[in-house]
Image (cartoon, rainbow, N blue to C red; front, top):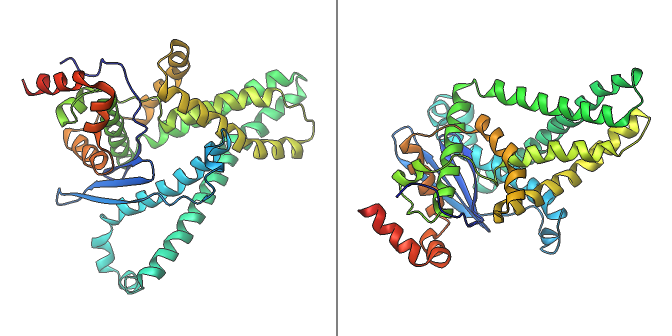
Amino acid sequence: MKGCERQMKSSNVGGQAVMEGVMMRNGDKYAVAVRTQDQKIEIMTDDCKGIFKNKKLTKLPIIRGVLNFVDSLVLGMKTLSFSASFFEEEEDERDTGKREKKELTVEQKENQEKVFMGLTAAFSVVLAVGIFMLLPNLIAGLLRNITDSNAVIAVTEGVLRIAIFMCYLIMISQMKDIQRVFMYHGAEHKCINCIENGLTLNVENVMKCSKQHKRCGTSFIFYVLIISIIVFTFIRVDTLLLRVGLRILLTPVIAGISYEMIKLAGRSEHKIVTLISKPGMLLQNLTTREPEPDMAEVAIASVEAVFDWKEYQRINFGKEFELNKEDVQA
């Protein structure tokens, strides 16, 4: 066996790295596996209770991307909070105020959590739009004193947006805690690649696979940045207020288009699609790190809690999968 060299077939399983763990989502189910301080793997599974209940809207192109983005953001906050709770227990025990909070009813705790997650998600979106969408526009707007070319200003704005994002990634990647999250991010990708390449899901095979994946959130953000350059090039508005307003209004549309690009990349091996995916996958070198074997074990535990990978490989790879099993065991 030479590792992940077979033709990839999308499983539609997605995930996210959390604190000392991995969240995996499959359809309406998700699981979070966390390596606790006593080296055990704690697993929590639950239904994905999306904010938007209208099933017709969640199937419409572009619109589904916006709705999925919001749901993913809220779910991401929830799973991060769950993983962090394992490392706050000792501190909570020493804090009287926090002990009193534990006496709240389950319903009160859930309501508090929903409010907190909603506010955090809203704040994150506002902050991201402000830093990555509006700030580059304000800076690039200074060029209007030098040139009237809308294309030059739009490209400059896009370059600034990418530069700010790159600087942000480089800065946070220096933090030790974030480095470990990026390692679990790599484990998440390796685990999905292992499944989608028809390899038996075990630590040895997972470690051999790529830490890059076409359906990664990092690639999604890259598409957002590039598509925003194209869209804003055709917007010719003189007033600052209108420019800012249009960027805010068009951000969901750009996110929706980017989501469709990610979906296409995940299910297609066409040369053009692969070429378009390359820059985003290269960018993943900043947001993923090579994981340790015990991190791969956590990722495997998470995916097995919500996904029957053996059945998936039997359907998609048939006899090839059976040969795969023999190769690994040999």
